[in-house]
Length: 329
Image (cartoon, rainbow, N blue to C red; front, side):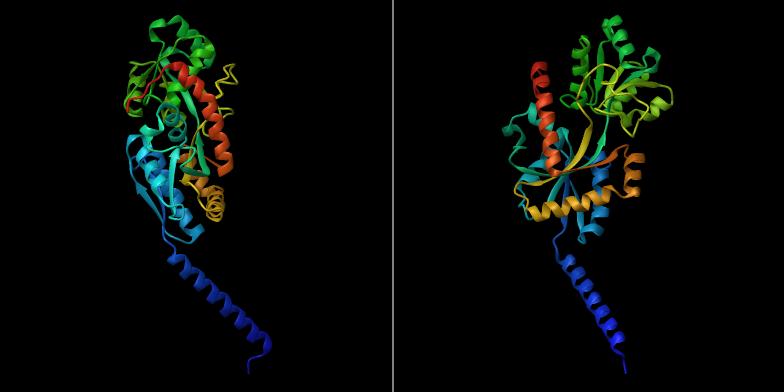
């Protein structure tokens, strides 16, 4: 005979096991989540997508696929997300530049989407500071000495960037305007050629993601001038902000976010936000982002992302307009 306590215990265990199996089966029945990346494999957006996909599989109980669609600065990926049904489980991970600087420098017709109408902001995933760096032979080690050096070297008032029309481009122009120095941008075809010329002295100054310069600063070949951020970054806590040094650039960090199609169901939005926040709080994820991708895990929900985007659009709009910059399609 089985006593009542043992019977109830077995009954409860069986019920829990049945529920777990049913939940697991239901999860397997869900269509996969697809995260589209608009940049080449191995880059920052692709790498963070693969980290998030691995962790979200466990959190959400369903398959998560990374779909690479590189081209025209992330626009192909954005167009694919715009075209997806709001219930399709389609998302995009991209840097804020896709929604800020492209929106301000291209028309909706050129882009093929309207950032204000065609997407749902889900979450911010990480941040990374933009920095000005100089060839160490200049002797420059901070913003004030850089401005003094630039004023004394009129023929060297140029700064390199990894391309034209992005945050590094306009951060440099903004600093020059605030300091009263006419700094001219020299756009390169990617960060690699820029770093080569910085190390060789062909260009003395560069504005780039701070993480891309760290190893060369530690080797004594480049110096940080400062970071374009409202506060010091955990990535390079020893480097002061431009604001600390008396130059209120106010541009903020670069950051990675996740967006879905317009009209994403509220329950799905909240489910994704809860899972993403949980993943970004994992110590191993924080460590991977900081040491391997040179980014800081930083969560914002969709409403906070929209607020940040509005701030950046309002901040950069007049600066870009005053610059007279016209992009090539």
